Amino acid sequence: MNRLLMLLLVWIFLVPGAAFAAGPSVPLDAVKVNVHDRDALQRGAKLFAGYCMACHSAQYMRYTHVARDLGWSAEEMRENFLFTRNQAGDPTPMGDMMQAAISDKDAVEWFGVVPPDLTLSARLYGEDWMYTFLRSFYLDESRPLGVNNSVFASIGMPHPLWELQGYQEKVGYENKRPVFELTQPGGLSPEEYDSVVQDLVTFMTYLAEPIKLQRESIGPWVLLFLAGLTFLFYLLKKEYWKDVH
Image (cartoon, rainbow, N blue to C red):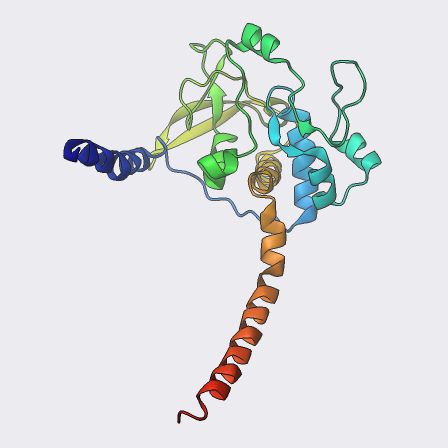
């Protein structure tokens, strides 16, 4: 029994620490994310629908929830975000969970694996990791799909935003950071592409914790309520103890 308890303690305290110590293989670039910026959320949502949901799901979020938080009507939601259809061929209902356009069967046939769900990816990896990841694809002829990623080595997916960024090559390292050279320009300049990635990461950060929008807005009211309640308890305490003193 004691031995089992010791093994359990080692697992609890040492394994997470080792995983944390391993960390990313390269230094991460910092990104500033503001989930209260509705314009950035809407731009990021359009990017997510256009470039991510062909293969990846966000099955722990409903379309109606996104529409409400981003201020879109049902018509705007279908125009900007909801492009899929159900198995019967009808437009996907607004109340459904956010599923990928590709079926699991086709995903396994094309990629060898079902692409992971992205609902909680921002909480799992962090904003800086995702921002750096989406800017770190580079050409690599040794990979089946012709690209690799400095943050996620031997990745098994194509560069999802290649039309916007273009293709770059890794030419070396500087201060442990990979240095890239853009060899095939995309539709955006490097500065514009960084801004686009920031919008996408902003939406995915919201996606991982949508309650943050409401939680931060009601926070001051909760503190005000607690302050008023504390004052009432103070008056009540004085009333109870006035005869004692």
